[in-house]
Image (cartoon, rainbow, N blue to C red; front, side, top):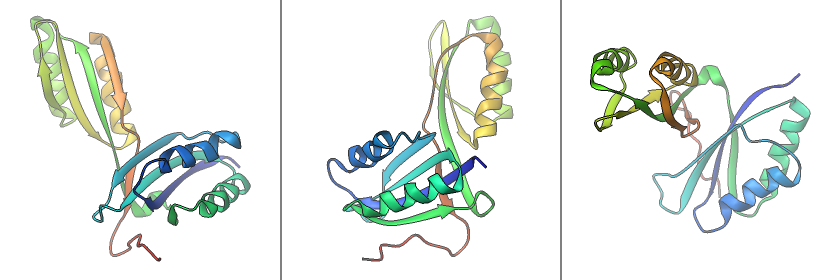
Length: 167
């Protein structure tokens, strides 16, 4: 059965690591639904949050192949019920002056922030889970979305659980 899997992967923070991880997926024909990478509390280590849709056998292969990469420190599957996950979206909307009040009302409902305004457009920044981001985009469609970009999922385990460098 195909389902969503979220991986948190600690890797060495240096040139070429992201390319090697992405290459592993492309060489084997696996699709990455979402990929987010950032430095951790230790500047020498980055954390990747990778979301894939696949069956359990393929997921086991992905984890096995990732663990063989030299720069991979540790891998953890995150359970959707035990994590805090967020996406960031920037949405540029057609925003003539007569429509701005309506757009600002929608932004307030979703706790979005206006980050840029011109005579003819606005850019909103919204953070939240995928459903929240999809919902605000759906609401803003009637005004004409010029551009939208989402970061992909970033996730961390709830509570005292930690992903640690075991090396």
